[in-house]
Length: 569
Image 1 (cartoon, helix red, strand yellow):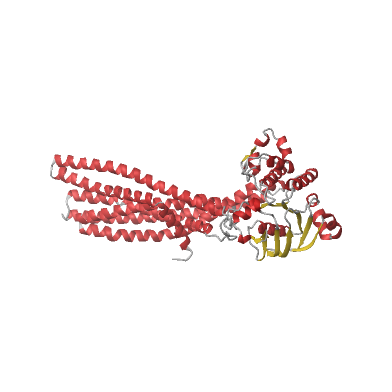
Image 2 (cartoon, rainbow, N blue to C red):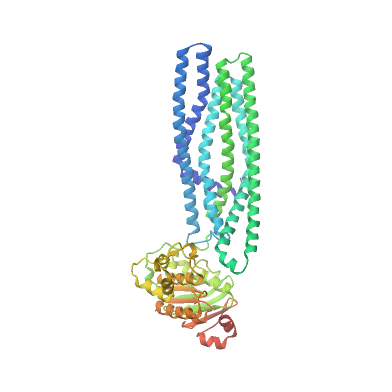
C-alpha cells in the first residue's frame, strides 16, 4: 500500500464507521434478503419434486405457501435494507461536506491555498457523494457475498462437484474483478480532478464577468474555459471507457462461469447423480448467481471511484494550516483591547525587517510602492500568515500567543475585494454586530457614504443584495463593505484601499467620515489615496519591502519623490 493511500483510506473508513449502525442494519437485512433469494430455487425444486415427480398435491401446496412467505420477507428486507443503506450514504456524504466546509472556513486557513472556489465546491459535493456511496456499496457487497455463500452451500448439498466449483471459482472471479477496477480507479481520480478544475475556472470567470467584459477579454476567457472543459471531457470519456470495458469483461467472465456451472449440472443430471428437482434448483441457482456477481462488479466500480474521491477529500482535510490556532480563548472581551500595534523586524514575503509602532487611538496611513507589499502586510496584520522573522504585537503580546478568535475580534482587516452576501443591504452592514443599538449603524452608513446608496434605492436598507453584491454597482458595493467594517467598531481597524471605486468628492467625504466615526480607536489605512492620507496622523512609506520614510502626508509629498509617484501618479 502506498503511503499516499493512507489518508484516503482513513476518510473512507471514517465515513463507514460514522454510519456503523445503518451499515450494520442494511448489511443484516441484505444478508437476509440474499439468503431468501438463494433459497427460492431450492423451494421451487422441492415443489417440483413433490408435485411433479411424486404427484403430492398437498406437498406442492405446502412448498408454494412457504415460497409465498419467503417472497413477503424478501420484499420487506429489501425495502428496509435499501433504506438503511441509502440513509448511511447520504448521511456520510453530509458529514463529509460539513467537515470540508469546516476545514475551509477554519480560522487557521490553508485549505483553500492553490485551489479555486469551484474546485472546493466540487470536492464538497461530487467527491463527498461518491465517498458516501461506499457505505451503500458495502451493504450491497455483504449481501452479495452472503448470496454466494448460501448458494454454494446449497449446491454442495445437492452435489459436491457443483459446490466446490462455486466455492473455488467465485473468489477467483472476484479477484479478477478487483484487478480490473484498478484502471478505473486511476482514471476516475483524473476525471474528478479535471471536473473540479473546470468547475473552478467556470466559477472564477463568472465572478469576474464584468471585469472581463470591461477589458474586452471575453474571447480569451471563453478559450480558457473551452480548453479546460475539453480536458475534463477527455478525462470523463477515458473513465467511461474504462468503466464500460470493466463491465463488459466482468459480464463475459460471469457468463462463462455460469455456463460452466450449468454444464457441470447438466452432465450430473444426465448421469443420474442428481434428480429432476435438484437439476431445476441447480439451474435456478446458477441463474441466481448472476445477481450477486453483477452486484460485485458494481461494488468494485463504486469502491474504485470512492477511493479516488476519498484521496481528494483527504488532501483538503489534511492541508497544512496557514497559522497555528494559538491558545484557547480566555474569555476576555475584545473591548478591553487598547489597540497598540507594533511590528518589530517583520519579514514576510517581500517585506524585509519592517519596524512600526502605532499608538492606541492613532490613525496611520501606509503607502506601498508595490501592491505585493500591501498584501503581505495585510496577511500578517490579520494573522492569515505568520512572518518568517520578527513579530506583530497587539498591546505588547505577540499575535501567536493570543487565540485566533481574540485576534480576529480585536483586529479587523477589511480588504479591498471584500465580498457582500445575499440578503438585504442592512443585513450586510450589520453582519458583524451583536448589539441592537442602531446608532453605530447609522454612523457607519453616514461615514462611508452608504446613506446616499440607501436614499437611491427604493427599498432603502431593505434593498435585496444578490450573492457577492452583483446587484449593486462597484462604488455601491465598496461603500456597503466599508460601512460593514466601520459598524463592527473593532479596537483596531485596517482598511485596504476602501475608496477606489468612488468619485473624488465622495472620497473626500468618506475620508472625513472615517476619521470622525473611528474617534479614539486605532485605524490603519493601507492606501495610496491622497484624500485618505490627508486625514491621518502620520504616513509610513514602504519601498522595496522596507520602511523608508515616516511623516505627515504634506511633508512627504514635498520631500519624497517615490511618495509623490505612489500617491499622485
